[in-house]
Length: 369
Ligand SMILES: C[S@@+](CC[C@H](N)C(=O)[O-])C[C@H]1O[C@@H](n2cnc3c(N)ncnc32)[C@H](O)[C@@H]1O
Image 1: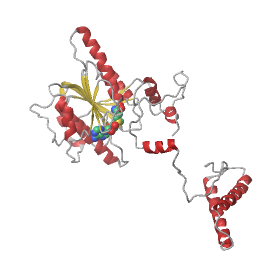
Image 2 (image 1 turned 180 degrees about the vertical axis):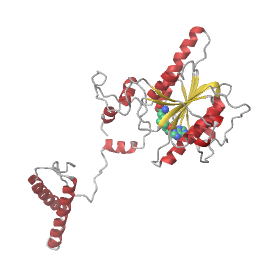
Image 3 (image 1 turned 30 degrees about the horizontal axis):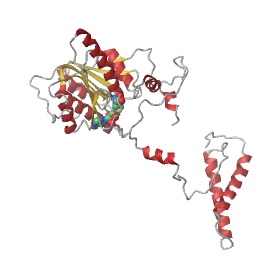
């Protein structure tokens, strides 16, 4: 991918870099907040599945604003933000970071230990599994992440607090809504403008944490029954219809549309990502390229063709096969009379290719190589 191709495609990606957010996801939380006011008055928050950290940046900015406001009235405690992810995250000032799996009891206990005598006002979870492409599997793993997040939340969220989590709007999502409704009287499904319409991603906003009378949080709660649920059979209190809210003004850009680089009347300038990955899997390959001490060429490929702009792929394959055949035949004929000189093969192929290519003037298929 070229340096600017993603910039050209995605306005939220561009804006994130311009405004100093580590990821375009920041706009999802900001747009949810604009609509649902989830950050108003919040002093303690947990960011589950936080890397690379744009939601933590939003939390840090807003919680510090809340703190400054509270200082004016004289009654304020410094904000507290705990961020957790499987992946390492570059440090962020004022954010306590834990590296771990939120579905693992040890990580959950570590998070809970940070709230020993305190409770959080808000828990957010933007957790997404590495998608496998097997939709049922991906949806299942996503729902497990949400339930793990909910489980941790029941240990640390204060009564009346808010829980926001990514959800996949797919089959049986109503089962998840119903489970959330056990703990929160207000459950909304929101879709920020910055979340692509083509994605089944949405966010549940659950307000006013009110666990059932006598509920004791524990880590072994089998929240997902895995039994098929025919929603239409449910009636009365068991049938939960969750309101659907679109967040973000219609004047906000649509995340599925490509906008021109000067869309907002500004001259386009490329910005480096705010926070590059700290240990990407491709790091080794990059360092090899930088040192230029590795020869990536295949030793068995001895043909260099540099003038085939007007050829189609199928023409090229046909000609390459034919050329190879000719070379093989001539090799067989001359075996015994001279050695195998690969340079001659190159020259011979070049000669054949350039003769045939120079004759071509049009390209019907258009699939240039
Ligand atoms: C979409 S990203 C989060 C982006 C983040 N909200 C931000 O604004 O920068 C999803 C994250 O979920 C994390 N994740 C997935 N499964 C997890 C798990 N079981 N425990 C902790 N983190 C997990 C991934 O490592 C990934 O960083």
